[in-house]
Image 1 (cartoon, rainbow over the protein chains, first blue to last red):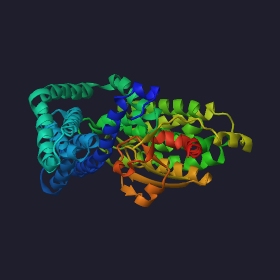
Image 2 (tube, rainbow over the protein chains, first blue to last red):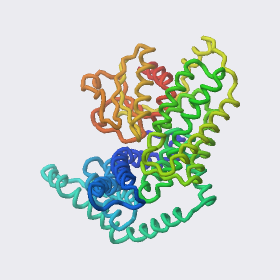
Image 3 (cartoon, helix red, strand yellow):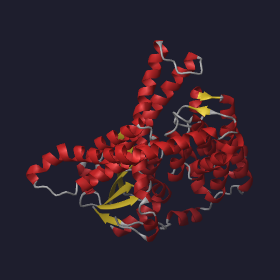
Image 4 (cartoon, chains in turn blue, brown):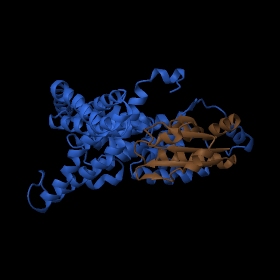
Length: 363
Length: 101
């Protein structure tokens, strides 16, 4: 890959993140189906414990199946993203083993990466054409699985499991004000790039632990809704400070925020990054912090108001979203200058802007 | 000039389609024929045909997540950018590419 100077700095992080994000995309439907169905079964039973018998027990078992598969899917698709099709099976198997030995999502991610590397390097072994079928049918799945799963089971599984137990206990033991720093940081990460890479890291952290630590999504889910809802409210209250297009986008942003799509805030941020991005960051931090403080549990790996049916302490969650959104709306509303229609000449200059750097690669 | 591209993003609900739209809009304004395939949550939409690919001067691929089927672009000139860059700078991208063609 042709790299320029700014890319070199993140040369290992950019591809690593790409693989993680690819896998997260495949993982989310597992968590959505599993997490929400499971939470529904618990809610319908009306007791604070998981139903094990009767129809609700069966419903809970459907949910558990989804939750049991999401970490294997995460690891499998990390390996898939790194090594293409042959990586999938070794990644799935290794990440499944990680869940069996309680190494959690970190074990799943590391397992997927190991399987990806293993298959990637196995692919480098040159074999005569006659034996090519042999390698694809036997060498990659067998070798990849034995190497990656072997390392997981014999070497690193137990230490990761210990670390995960420690992490879960530590995060669970945080109470009241002790959760504040975590909430502020996670919320700020969600708001700062509105659905971009930093946001996804915070989301993935909370999503992969939605079964063990649902309070994380309780804050992060509220924070994710905050930038678009806050900006939408700002366009309604501070009409004079927004262009007609912005006001249309404001309605769309309100809807997207309700559905937990932080990306709804992007049009505003690209138009006026210096005012909008800080507002979003602070507002999302406030929302996440409030969600943690109010003890909101969100059993869906998603945000916005659309998840309310599976949220414990709904009013707290709504209050968290409202507080964060109010902060965004007020900061943007007071910081923004009144809107003046641009002259066509200015617009033209912007359209001719050639300010972009890229390399052309020959594939 | 003709451009094809594939966009994709982690959650596959917003950036994927915003980037595709940005490219199409920027192309329309400059009379560039643009075909964009989206690989989102609901799967592949507007899959590129081999005819569209072979006629294209440039291929634009997003880098947020792994694009499926990159072997289709063997021998083509490829530009790889994040969806955010595409959304923000689609006009500039089209300007620069049309100067190079």
